[in-house]
Length: 219
Image (cartoon, rainbow, N blue to C red; front, top):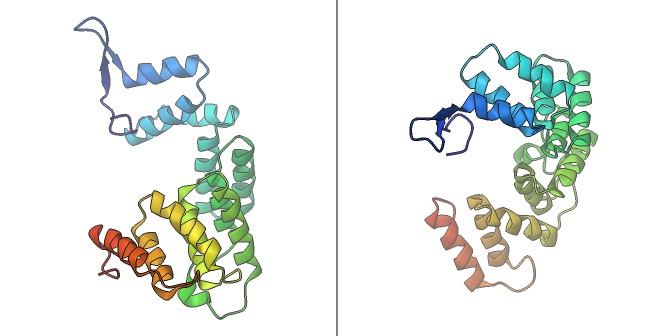
């Protein structure tokens, strides 16, 4: 497996008894100007509680490695340094981290626009609109974490006007990502004819897909 934390610590080379450690492999990539390897090295050392991680955290900041910038932003926010956190997120965006838009939106509000049970029917908060706009920006780069909240915002009509056509667009994108809740909501749209006529066949197809993946609501 190639995921950090799960990859084997060593890699077999051409000679049957020759191995290269994960540290050495990452160091080699860093020396070959692979900026992403800096973050991978940092995570690898952090997971193994190796004090050398600080060296690579510093290197990542010096080279504006986007994942390192997002990590530091989240740490700053955790430590109540909101303004500093936002600066790091903007720098991360400038260096190609588009999930930073999502976090930037989260930092702009004390609550979330997608807590619909609390928000629908209430006056729209400016901070919720700002958060939604940041989520929309992230969605342009296919950031998975923002797709479903945007879809439901258009479905419920908060903090934007209700728009089932736009909701369906994002719900179908979420379905492509195997999102069970999205399948259920697509079924609801077809069941209630929100896009025109009721489509029982399409409704059953999406409800069945959601139920087969564990959705109790779709049963």
